[in-house]
Amino acid sequence: MRDDPQCVDCMTALVEVQDLTKEFRTFKRREGVKGAIQNLFVRERIIVKAVDHVTFSIEPGEMVGYIGANGAGKSTTIKMLTGILVPTGGRVVANGFVPCRDRRHYTKRIGVVFGQRTQLWWDIAVVESFKLLKELYEIPDADYQKRLGLFSEILNLKDYMNTPVRKLSLGERMRCDLAASLLHNPPLLFLDEPTIGLDVVAKDRIREFLKEINRLERTTVLLTTHDLSDIEELSRRIMIIDRGKILFDGDLAEMKKRLAQYNQVKFFLKDRAQAASLAQITTDGISCERVDDVTYLMRFDRDKHSSAEVIRNLVNRLEVRDIFIEEEPIEDIVKRIYLSGEVG
Amino acid sequence: MKRHLRLFVLYFAQYAKVRLAYKADFIIAFFSSMAATVLGFGFVLVLFTKIPKLQDWSFYEILFLYGFSLIPLGFFNVVSWNLYEFGDLYIIEGRFDRILLRPVDTLFQVLFEKFRLESLQEVATGIAVVTISARKLNISWHAADYLWFVVMVASGALIYLAVFLILTAVSFWFEDRVGIVPPVFNMLTFGRYPLTIYNVFIQFMLSWIIPFGFASFYPTTHFLGRENFTIYFHLVPVVAATFAMLAVVVWNRGVANYSSTGS
Image (cartoon, rainbow over all chains, first blue to last red; front, top):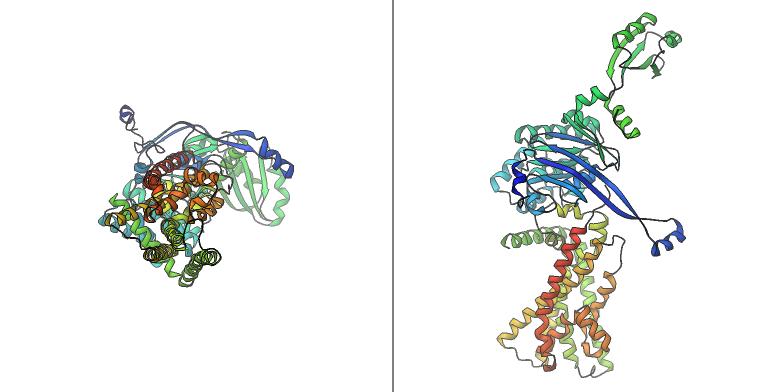
């Protein structure tokens, strides 16, 4: 946005996205041999709006979780924010740049990780990849050494620094990709499904690393994920996109408060015989789901019933050994949003 | 420029290291490349056992031309691998995303990501054959001729590169696998013989549409003393520069049009 200086002045946000839209033009493909021949001559154009007037802004130091079902528009948004795709409409200003216009300067000041695809060179050793990146990003020697030392300590990279990337396990590769994306100390980091396919320990290590970097360098992070525990662990802010539109943008706690419809009570019966009296408690908007012979999950509308009342009712009628009260899991809230395509 | 040169050396060294780590693979590639070159010359030898002259071109003149054509081609082949696979690997598989995320020119990154090292053999063979045939033909070399020779080799390599860059950039618009590159690749062999042996249509095409004539035939006419092609000879660097600029424009348009893979 160098040629539009008044714009830079009025912005305090690190990322400013306004009415961002991306349309893809494709052709309808007919099936079968006959269809294939028809395709050669008459092609029916279809326009798909992958991202539809999306507006949001991100402040320096924020960690934002960006979620949505497959094909909702997450990756397309990230690709526009990183400058890979040119928007059809609207605008993006990040780090003071218009990403797709000033790509070569902009990419020096962002880090990008795509969980599905490595950014490193497949055949060469990790440390050699890092050295190439050092040259590409013109990182001074001292900074490079310092950051490499820090990363290999937190991420424990030492054991496979000399292994070619293609021989690494997914978890190891992901750690290397993360380190690679941050070698040039970018203030802004984009992560597209960074924990996809990783085991619990590997996920945890990556989350800890991100928290640490965010704390040490105030690195701003925008991450997409299908694993909602990533978001619960990392970010306070969540954005939900569905069919190209932002459905929710706000605090995670706020989302739970606003969108959770029920609470659940998990209880263990003293013995099987108690199950016979279950029917007594499942009335008036209270449902009860069997987990096993003695374990049951009761859900009730939080507006209609209070937990205290429900539990009192429960212990009065049945002999119960243990009780756990839980909020509606975030997965369920999100599932409901994906299925209905609307919030609330 | 200095930075790019540095990066080039690094890319090259890095790739050479990987390639030479698989010795057997490299040796096989080297010998199959060598075999193709030798077979090509074998064909010329056999041809000239049947005929004394090809039009008014003598055996050593043809050999000179054939040898020269290998030099720019060899340099081009060192990087051509990346262009040959570009549509499949970079566009359809979406590897181009990674290229766009780095703060260096896209063309630089694509061209120098892989090197066909064994093709340097073509350069060496070409120089050897040119030296031998020049001696047999008693060509006298002036200081300026050496300079011209270098300019011609550079121009030839640039022409090959420009033509294939333009064809490669087509993948930015048509993601369907278009098989336009392989047939043109096969046309490279046309330039190994004097253009005068072809009909007018092919002569025109190899000069002005796909200017392979300017990468092999016209450059040699000066050294072989064929004065009637002097204008064409001097046009060689001009044609090379024009096509190179055109290629860069087409490439950049293509990059702007790139729409990346689904998710």
